[in-house]
Length: 143
Image (cartoon, rainbow, N blue to C red; front, side, top):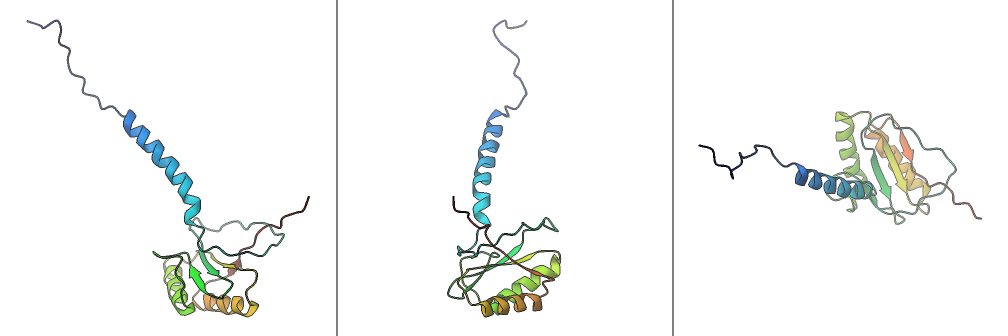
């Protein structure tokens, strides 16, 4: 005998809450992703140049040089912690042994001594970097 008021239970999973959570996480990652690659804030020199096309999909290694000459690397748990050139050379060397096509860039303050930039470039090349790029900003034009 059938019960007229009872319905058979539906064996389907309601995925709407999962989609909502996924969309919220997508927005969070989209907002935070640009902040993760910033590294240390420096005042970049301006130069009228075209952006280079990336040879690989790997995130580049960026060595930042502050105005006082202190060095920072966008790798590891503490990118805002000043490091020695030897420490940076060791870490860059490790990364380049595993991923030799990784780009290496210098993000230097416009007021630092040119000799310090050359010293860092030489150290990075000794660590195995094929070429070292310099990060600049596009010049701001006056109206």
